[in-house]
Image (cartoon, rainbow, N blue to C red; front, side, top):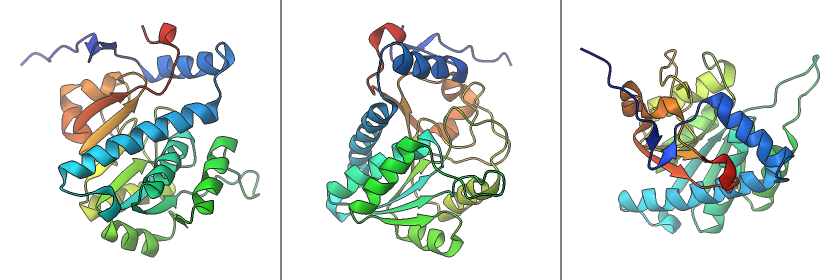
Length: 240
């Protein structure tokens, strides 16, 4: 049976590879002067708004909802932290589970500046922030959740998810809770749509800026769920 050909566009937008998305990110900040933290705020705001819509499809109002935001240590996690803060401000009960920063030369690591800033903002709002490595807290938090935000891995990741990210993905899968994935379901390759055996199955994927090529492949549909493309403020000249 011949493979189903990929369309050139999705919702009128060109399909992009992870490499092209990195180029757009770089040009947005270096050529057009946009700030990473502002793009992160835009992304988190758009994700939060669509999460409210998703909750309504489950018959839930935001103020009666419990959200578990599972965040990686990079930009995808930062987007999740922004969304968590805005959902909390809207009245939801929110818990964050964030992977520890990588150690460097045996010393405690640090989060990238935009992630660190948004982590502090979440804490200042009174959001319960747990390390994702705390498996008991993670299991309990996922058990309480009506919906899980997957902000673990974005287009910058490659290879099989390992370490704490691997364990969080397994915990999310065991929880059987509906997942809203930020940019792409963690573990799904943005270019091919394939996985290495460790992946998140999302009910809704909110991809940022432009649709990633792998997300529209026939074999990825069951992991991606409903796919929406969110405008987060990239320059229009880069979106063609």
